[in-house]
Amino acid sequence: MAIDFATMTDPRPTADVLRMMHALYDDGGADTQTEKERFPATIDRLLAEPWRGRIVLFMQQGSVCGYAILIPYWSNEFGGVLLFIDELFVEATMRGQGVAQAFFAFVEQTRPYDAVALALEVAPRNKRARALYERLGFSDRYHGTMVRRLTAADDPA
Image (cartoon, rainbow, N blue to C red; front, side):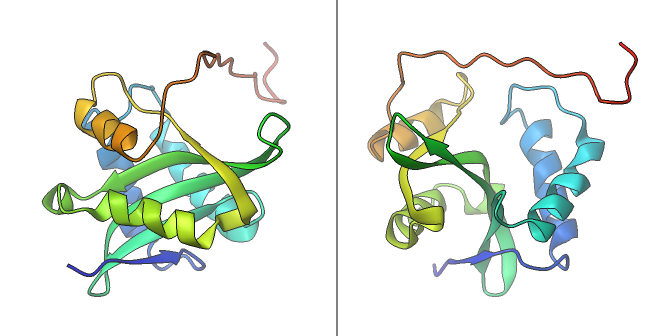
């Protein structure tokens, strides 16, 4: 099984990526409620402003079989760019074949944004993914993540 990884640089794979984004949230891979109608805006923004992040396509024989969204930010704690893997999805037929492991090897080798560390979230019930991430050296941090949505600039609330 040969998997290639390529940064999405044009909108042609959008339909495949959108289908997989929906599958990630529909299949219970993410515990967060999200507004799926915003997914195209994420793709558009990352294509137009690659300094904000990128979508990496997982390719097998010219077909997209997975994707990851990579978001860089400077971390004072880590003394460099912490690369947040905002989403990672592998098609169900490709799971258990080393695709995600190959992706992390690719990231380690290519160091997008000159990253010095990686971070990701995993749903507590996604034991299979958690086990993989732990095997790859990820560990829980003692700091909890807290989130608060901001009201839209044009929202009177």
